[in-house]
Image (cartoon, rainbow, N blue to C red; front, side, top):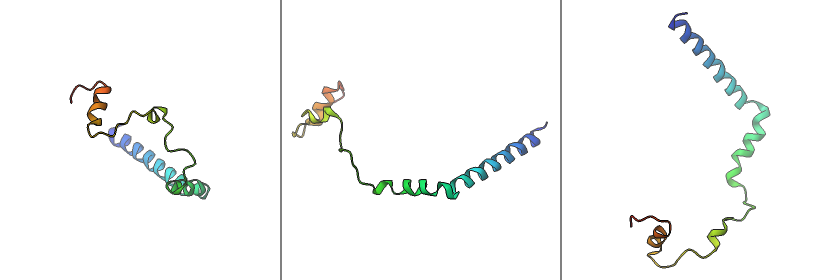
Length: 79
């Protein structure tokens, strides 16, 4: 088997894979799933915005240098 035959076989397999994925994506059976996914950005959030318990412990400071303080708290010495 020479390289031309091998390239032809690979090209044929890729064309078949492309046609299969295209058929799958545009099939009528998938339309409801894709319509639901398309509307996800417009869905209302039913969950609270932040579930992180450390964010509600009052670590944020209102002073302008709070960023520098937070870098020191994390161990970053490049201030």
